[in-house]
Image 1 (spheres, rainbow, N blue to C red):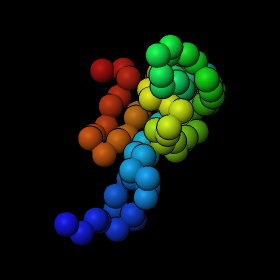
Image 2: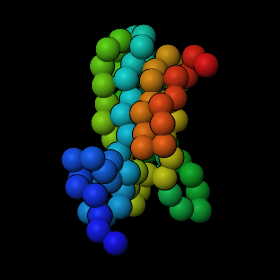
Image 3: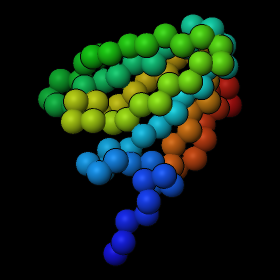
Length: 83
């Protein structure tokens, strides 16, 4: 089966998916959580209104927590944290 072009497929050659977070307000926190037996915070970012972060899941990041008013876009759809 042929893979779609990476311009339309939000994954890289390793299969790690990209996602986009757009802050709707100042002070949106994006927190990366680790893989493994113990889940821990390993990275945080603070976004202000209108800022966009493009990120991906990696061998170290298994989950992302978003705190604040934001829009999260993935290949599965769009999520608005206010809903």
